[in-house]
Image (cartoon, rainbow, N blue to C red; front, top):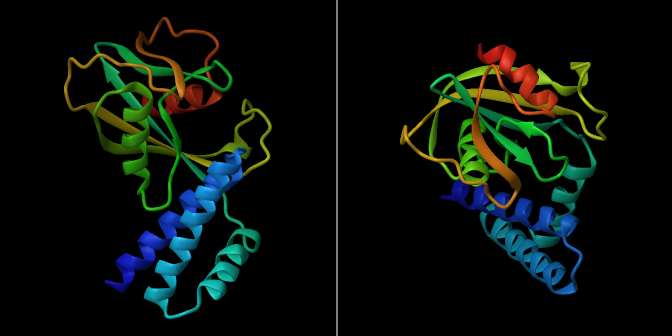
Length: 195
């Protein structure tokens, strides 16, 4: 029970901190501050520390020893084609995926991200590769150190039609010999691994 409460508190804290980082409106900031306060209160009940002690601990964890970010991608193939999504941020085509959220395993995150971006249900079948973004010469510069984890998966419903989610411009299958341009470096590196 204590472990569950601490995991829930950590996930709520993560949602609140991400919201505080990306939100600009005063009402959203207020709501995320409230979620953070509730996370601290829940954590204090489970850990028997004060909310203020936990706030300092959480703050030190994010400002102290920093670890790389974890990004996941899912390779889904059907009839000689690969599922790609067109990213809204840079308009590049890539395998569906995104950052792992607190509380997710990498495979769960890849499944969730594929559903959010392409509107289809998938299963992760195997780990295809782990890449250090810094070591990829074709990778654009980034402020963050990111590890990419690529999974090979399969459709839960083989005839499913991809539908672009709100994070992407488009989602569809492309023949492997007729990929769209421009393609993200992530896709190029992952494609080599999935072959």
